[in-house]
Image (cartoon, rainbow, N blue to C red):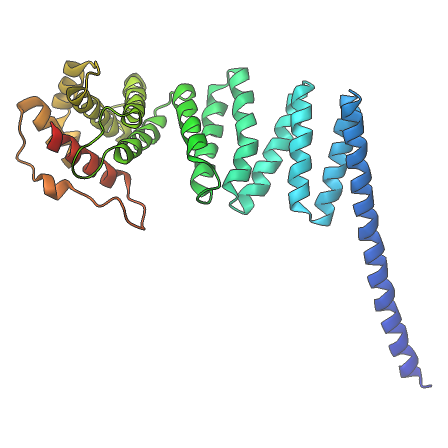
Length: 312
């Protein structure tokens, strides 16, 4: 046997041995992870929260080394929930944020939302309005990234309603206005009988109310002020079509004072409300919202306002 043959066999043996060592090392990590999780669950059941936290953290770290993202996320969520119940808010926040980061890398909106909601709750408990607004911003981003059907329509609506209750910033005005118009568009048909008095339309108008209530937080120099003016007009239009009570004169006076800032649909609606008629071509305002490409906010506004004008 030549020297080269011997060297070749040694190299093959080294590769074989290396593969076996890697397999054994990975197997050990998996067994350790399983062991730590079971110990964590037993400690939690026995009421030993600190020991459970330690084992959950160890199990999560091992799953991270194995590249097991799904179990890593699951363990981080369990650790975070336990830490929060145990009063270790700093650790809970760290684990929830870790989950948000892991999910964000893969654009997993629904999974990220599971960790964002507790962070919202913790910020609300501390009364930290700035952090609350930040996490709500992440929540709305996660909602947008979630695949169709991943998050139920009911849960989406509940989240939007909570957002309206908790966030009162200048930046929230555009978000709330968009959600309001979406609900009004869904509640009212393009043609024929429109269900302005339906619960869905009323829910959309509740969000218009929430938008209008933020008028003291909105500067006249920012784009959100244009949205605020339009929301005020939409509230008046809805009130004229139903029995809803609104501060009609305040909304119309503010729109008149800043008429140059009104969008084309808002200008047409203002004229219809203030003067009883408008020269705007209603058909030119119409937009087909039932298309594959999601409509922009200005398009939804144009269609909803065209429906208002047609029915007033």
